[in-house]
Amino acid sequence: MNEQIIARHWLAIIAPKAAPAIATSTVLILARIWNANGAEHSLGNAALMTVLSLGAAAAGACASLGRSGDGVLAGTAFAASGGLALAGVAGYADGISLPLLLWALATAITYGLAARYWRTDRRDTVAYERHVSDRREERAHIERVETLRATTQIEVARTGAAYAEQLAQALVTRATLPGFDLTALETAGLPELPSAERKSV
Image (cartoon, rainbow, N blue to C red; front, side, top):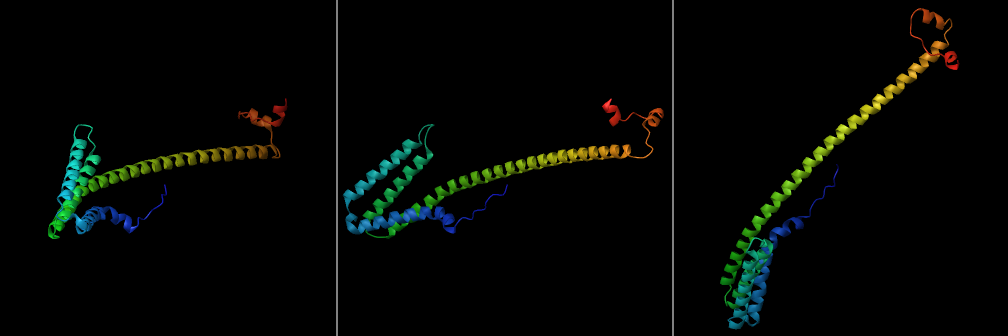
């Protein structure tokens, strides 16, 4: 019932929230490095990135079709398509304003899509914690009831043992009293009590 409390490090809390911005920023930085190394106004490089982006988008569309479509695979493919498109434009363009605009747009879209998954994950986590708490309370109640029942049985057994001991002591004490006459008790109509003499006969 006593479970260990684990405090998460602040980096572990912030990292998932910062991941979309880190991903789009990394793509922008690498694309600008690529731009400085000969990709600026290169039609061959732009065509390559266009083909790769369209291929990733087509893969995402295929993954999302049908009843057995995989949402995670489709989302990954569409994210790759957007990243390749951003890299192609940032690598081809000569200025920084268009790549920055596309970076801001891609980051906003990424956060919009991620927020949906974060809400679902939070809802599932809260439901799981509520279920675990309910089960824990139910088991604690059962443990309390069983503890009370066991304690009652122990007390009943102790009371019975104490009564038997007191009865045996009373019988021994009665037999040792002076003037004790068993026949007088029988003639008075009292119930017969067992004695050592009668047991031996």
